[in-house]
Image 1 (tube, rainbow, N blue to C red):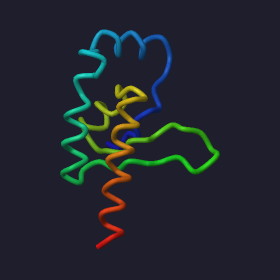
Image 2: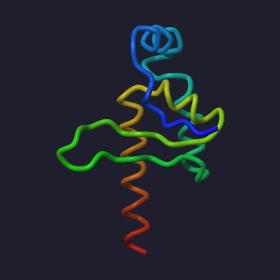
Image 3: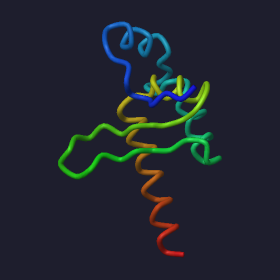
Length: 91
């Protein structure tokens, strides 16, 4: 099963996020970040001028966790992805 994070919206989503929030960060951020570092998550950056939503693509349970990431957590993963891209480009 493959789900692209960020497709869920509405009141139910917000209520679940509020319930799971822990010090402004969802309990899933560290797990998704670890999966990213292991190469199991892809971070999709928006094209210039076409919005700011960062998409997170993963498989299995990680894809479900990605749905509940906040915009700020998605931005953190985007910054990590940009740093990794710069390191790869400089090699």
